[in-house]
Image (tube, rainbow, N blue to C red; front, side, top):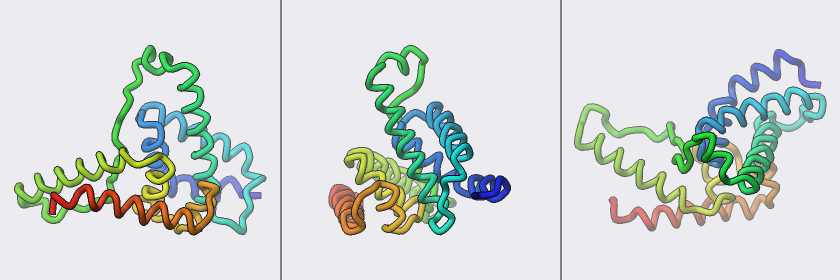
Length: 177
C-alpha cells in the first residue's frame, strides 16, 4: 500500500498538471478545483489499490479522467445547475508551459500572445480525446504508454491522435508564420 507521506508528496508534485488537465476537460475553473479535490479524496481512500509497479501519474490521471466524465454526465442531466450556480463556462485550457521568445520586446510579446490565443482556439476545436492526448503529451509530458493507459486506448492509436492533431493545428495556423 502507498504510504500516506509518499502519496502526499506524489500528489503535491502532480497537482498543478492535474488541475490543468481537469480544467481543460471541464472548462470551468471553479468546478475544476472541486474536481481535483474529489480526485485527491478518491485516490487517497483507494490508495491500497494503487499498483506500485506502475506510475502514480498514470493511476491518478485515470481517476481524474473518470471523475471528469462523471461530472460532465451530471452536467448534461442538469444543464441549468451550473448556470443557476453562476459557474463560468467555456474557459480555454491554460498552457502555462509555452515560452515567450522575448518578454522585453513588446512587438514579439504581442505576437506571442496572438499565437497563444490562436493555439488555444485550435486546441479547443479538437475532439475531446485528441485534445486530452495532446495536452497530456505536450503540457504534462506523459509518455504515449502513460497516455494510452490513462485514456484506455491502444498505444498506436494515441500516437496517431497526437500526430494528427498537431498536424491539423499546424496547418490551421500556417498563416501566422
